[in-house]
Length: 79
Image 1 (tube, rainbow, N blue to C red):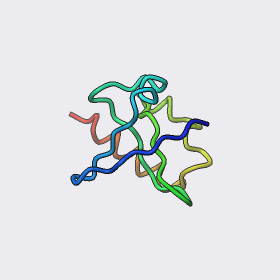
Image 2: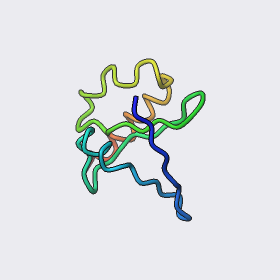
Image 3: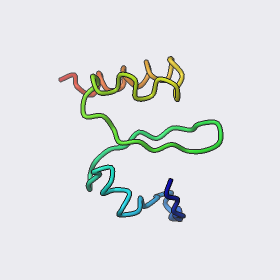
Image 4: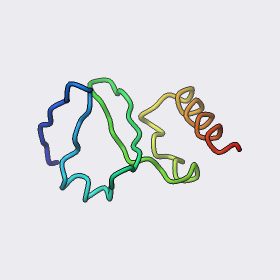
């Protein structure tokens, strides 16, 4: 596992190292999922659609949080 140290800016922003962004195929404007786990912060690429979320966070997030996230995404799709 590769580890890198990053600084948080005065605006609370964190830069993901370039090689990590390349490995995860993250590009400017992409969204990520961020949540707190027992001992730290977890950042994962956002799934492009809800079908891809199945199993992604199964053991890492509470069911009520998953439901809340799905409801939030559904609201964004409504016209």
